[in-house]
Amino acid sequence: MPFTARCWRRPHAALAAVTIFLTACAGASSDTAPGVCPPVVEYSAEEQARAAEEVAALPEGAVIVGWLADYAVMREQARVCL
Image 1 (tube, rainbow, N blue to C red):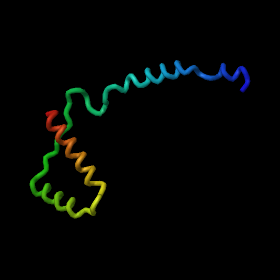
Image 2: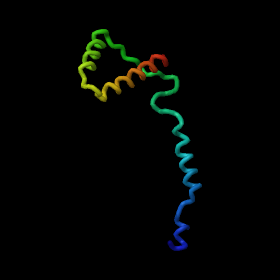
Image 3: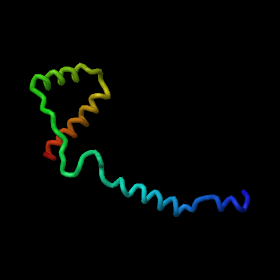
Image 4: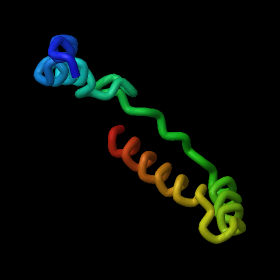
C-alpha cells in the first residue's frame, strides 16, 4: 500500500461520531404521537368463534398462529394505553 493511501481513509473516530449523530434522532418511535393510543377494533362473539374454528383448522406449526399471538399482545397493549 502506498504511503498516501492512508490519507484517503476516513478516521474511525469520525465514522463513529457520524453514526452517533445519525442514530440520536432514532431514540423515539414515529409510529404514534406521544399520548396517542391506537384504536382497538371490537369483534363480535360470532366473529371470534369463527376465527377460533379457522385457527384450529390450520396445519400444525402454521406461521400465522404465531402472528396472531403477537397481534393479541399488541391489542392488549393498546387496551392498556387507553
